[in-house]
Image (cartoon, rainbow, N blue to C red; front, side, top):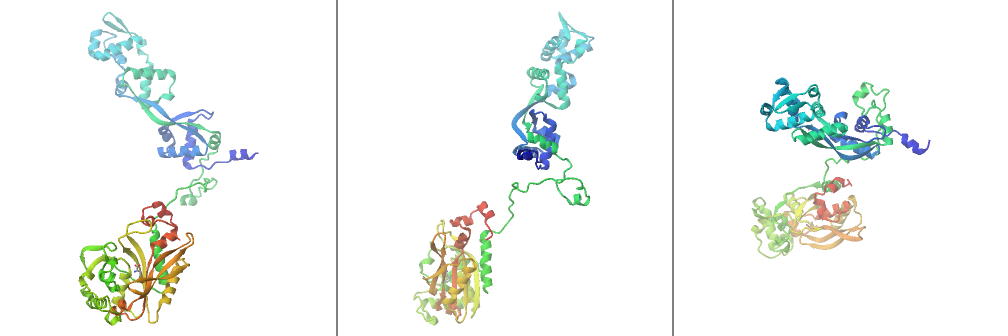
Amino acid sequence: MTSKDETKNQIVPLHPIERTLLLSLVHEVDISDHETRISLDTLSKNSSLSLDQIRRGIEWLKAKNLLEVSQNEIKSVELGPEGLRAISEGLPERRLVKSLEESGGRADLSSLKNKLGQDEFSVALGRAKKNDWVEVKGSEVTLRQPQASRKEREEEIIEQIGQKKSIHLDELNPQEKEAISSLMKRHKGLLQEIVQKGVSVRLTEEGRIASRSVNKDEIDEITPDVIVSRSWQGKSLRTIDVSSPAPNLYGGRRHPIRMFIDEVKEAFVSLGFEEIEGTMAQSSLWNFDALFVPQQHPTREMQDTFYVSNATADLSKYSSQVEQIKASHERGESTGSLGWRYKWSEEEARRVVLRTHTTAVTIRYLSEHRPSEARVFCVGKVFRNEKPNYKNLPEFYQIEGVTVGPKLNVRNLIYIISKFYSKLGFEKIKFWPTYFPYTEPSLQTMVYLEKKQRWMELGGMGVFRPEVTVPLGVHNPVLAWGLGMDRLVMLRYDIDDIRELFGANLEWLRKAKVL
Ligand code: PHE
């Protein structure tokens, strides 16, 4: 046996739909290589499969090369209103015959005309004469027997359609077809033509082999019932092609940003930190003033900060802090500095902003707890009035935190931040001096992008100035940082445009790996 023969005789695994369809096609299709036209409705009726299953089944069989198929139209006829009448009362010529019978086999032309009505009478008489059922002499019509008792082909076909409800034109012999076309010509209401979608089907060589090896007793699905009843014994199981493509199923899942946030939290918790939270709308007091940002500072201006209109914060709860902060801005005082030397306005501090950094959350925490030691972090959204483009959005995430302790210094800060990044898989980072109004020294951190061969800025940090901490009653050094998060997510998922992160790109959301 050659390998070609082997493949020919191999049993093709068939889905139950394919099996049922194949078997019902074998009934319809002449095995000796003829094409058969068949309507999908008929196939559906014969096989008890739904139209949809039939369509799919045909495609599958075609793909397996068991079937050759072409689409076509199948014409059939049904009875129209006149046709239905003909079933109960006969065609007009038959009705004429009946009238004649009633009047003893002969009648006057005008009385028949009266009975049948002018239109019907002329048709009926013409047909009856043509069929040789009647003879007309002068004004008298005589019935001819036995001719008039014989059914005409047109009458037979109408009865046939009446019984079957509809008849495929393809299934008729030439005489029947002729009768149908003559009926169609006679009166529009007699027959109605219906055009349906159908298929021309031809079983291929392989299809014929497959149809012979279809095992009706095959078990499709192993259910508990099949096992308990042992009905599987002596039967074969359906072969399943596990390599055939199946639709992907996408369940609900967390957004990649959410997954990353969890990872960030995990990293800080594992370093001994506790999470703190704060609201997105904050008073200027916590977003700016408590951080020793002077009230005329450019970052407070409208183009950077979203102010919440018609809202003022109630600072009465913080009256002692307000006093201290005011003193620190105006004169420095206990902080050992000269302050900014201007008239500080409480009204300005009451203005509500969408937090421009999460530092508002940590500073409020410090003022409420006045810790001598602490390790806390916060992950949240911040808002800045920036034009959206591939690297900036007006809202983004920050990873914020502080460590408070008696002997802490900037080296500890570098250590903590390096440790944090390495937990997230970013090893090559460096620190660079920079400026913030609230820290001294101030650093920024950068990560090296191997792929792009360049350094990218990640965020700022430093040791809070005494002008910030002393007025709040915190006397130990405070190491603080506020790092960008979105860029880390972009690096992780190899995304170049930040807008993709927040877009509704389902394809990406479904497929983004859990990294
Ligand atoms: N708040 C700064 C920013 O938004 C980051 C920062 C936080 C810097 C804490 C120093 C200390 O960029």
